[in-house]
Image (spheres, protein in one colour):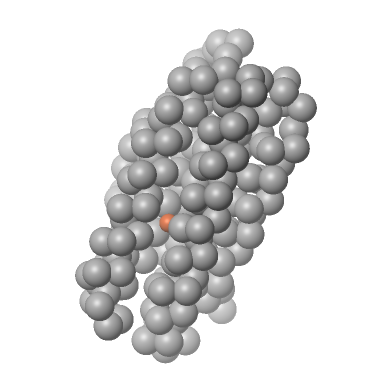
Length: 179
Ligand SMILES: [Fe+2]
Ligand SMILES: [Fe+2]
C-alpha cells in the first residue's frame, strides 16, 4: 500500500526543516555543502508540489485556485531569494544573515501549505486517491536527477550542482517523462 501522498509531503517538510537548522548551525566551511543538500531537496519538493499536487488543489478544494496561486507566489519569491543566496559565498556572515530570513519564509510557506492546502486536499480525497498521489510523488523523487553528471568536475560545490533554477528544470523534465 502506497503512503498517503499528503503524509509524504509533510515528511519532506520535516526534512526541509532539519536541513534549514543544519545550514544555520554548520561551521562556515561546511555551510555550503549543507546548503546544497537543502537546495536539492527543495528543487524536488517544490517541483513535485507544482506539477503533481497543485492540479488536485485547484480541482478538488474550495477556493482551490486562490490557494494554489498564493502558494505559487510564495514559492516564486523563495526561488528569487535562493538565486540571490547562490551568488554569495556561503561561508560569509552576509550569506548567513540572508539565509536566516529565507529560513523563516520557507517555514512559513510550509506551515501555510499544511494549514490551508494539505488538510483540505486530504479531506477531499479517498484513501485510494491519496495512495495514488503518494506513488506519483515517490516516483518523482526517484526520477529526479538532482546530481549532475560525474564528469562535471569542479572544486566549487555550487558549480557542480548548478543553480537552483537548472536543478528545477532537470527535475521538471524527469517528472514529466515519468508521468
Ligand atoms: Fe511549496
Ligand atoms: Fe511544501
